[in-house]
Length: 312
Image (tube, rainbow, N blue to C red; front, side, top):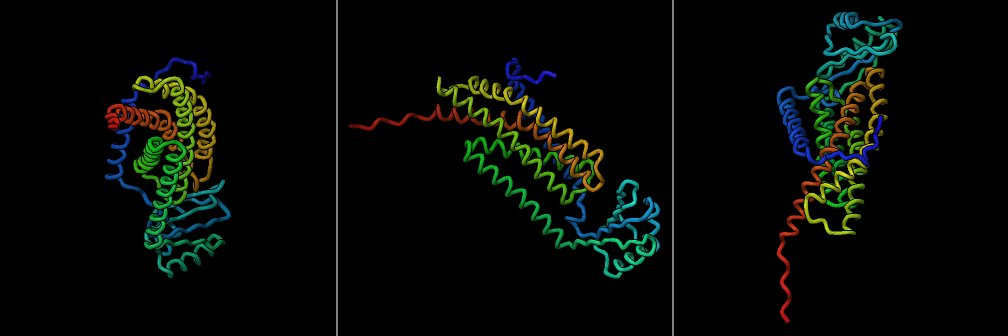
């Protein structure tokens, strides 16, 4: 497979309106999904109880449901794990009473020979976790904007954070569509996606900045065609690196998603989605957005009236 794009005559700037239209369409679709389906919040962000237990022989969901029914409980979700399904996790929406927790611990200890581990999240703790997750994501994004703005310029930072918001929103929208559980590992996956995506965007922007500096050494950048040529050249120069990087990471993420344990499935799936969205946004959204904004800034500078000469 020939990934040497630097010397090829490919115009990635011409279809920029199609890229923008696609991005807007995805955002609108995501907004509709979130307003209709909502998010499937796990017990990390809503009050609930999680019961983890194991047995010496394979378990089935029907067997587990029957054991809970004997003590008058009905779990909202049951997940099997382990090589032979000898481990299981049951979740209840809403916190169980202490008496109910004691009854199930005694019952499962008698049936399977192992006392289950019970963890409960109260509504207050769930709200605090949700708020802290939003704060963590917001601080990470703010730090990225400040660094990029200082290291490059404000328009680079603004374009980068817009692309990052798209990446995170895309992952959240897909989870809303599939009604996958939103939990602490999911937040970790989103922050990982943000870190990976900004790394790819920084590499692209750094090459754009280098080529802009080289062009300005020879002549002033006065029109959109000059600027578009620089951006297109920079994208082609970094495209090989971006594809090689994302494919190698994607192979590992897909392997974890398909072959990993049930506990990290949502984390790995979010990483896979984020890798795809991040590569797209770095190459075909963030750079194109910077191009449009930078062209407008150059035009404003050109249209600014020249200062009047001081009278002697």
